[in-house]
Image (tube, rainbow, N blue to C red; front, side):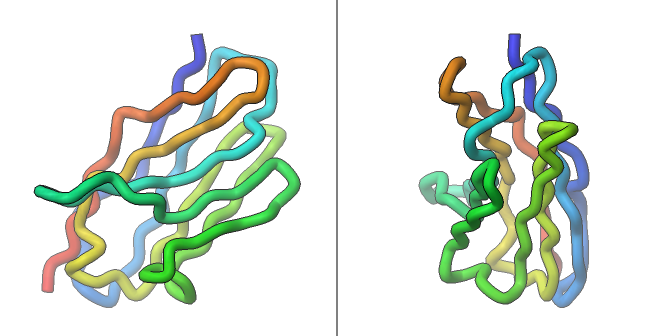
Length: 116
């Protein structure tokens, strides 16, 4: 059973930084793509950033230049470095991993709160 374990959320002041981590366990398969989504109260879940096993990345326009996604394939782990955080970045952040062999999995979510 694949599990995604997230860490790194919390409370930070506007302009600050946080780093999220998400490790996939329970499988020897490498995730084809891993990414981060977020959902703010009253809003739909949206893609923040994604990265393939080959290193290709995709970012939401709202976070370009501020957030950086990276991954460690040896650990099946994805990271999201978030800088210059804004109050509008406040949301629950969800890790996502897509496996060609196994399908798609979600983490339990981690709260990021940016105070202004």
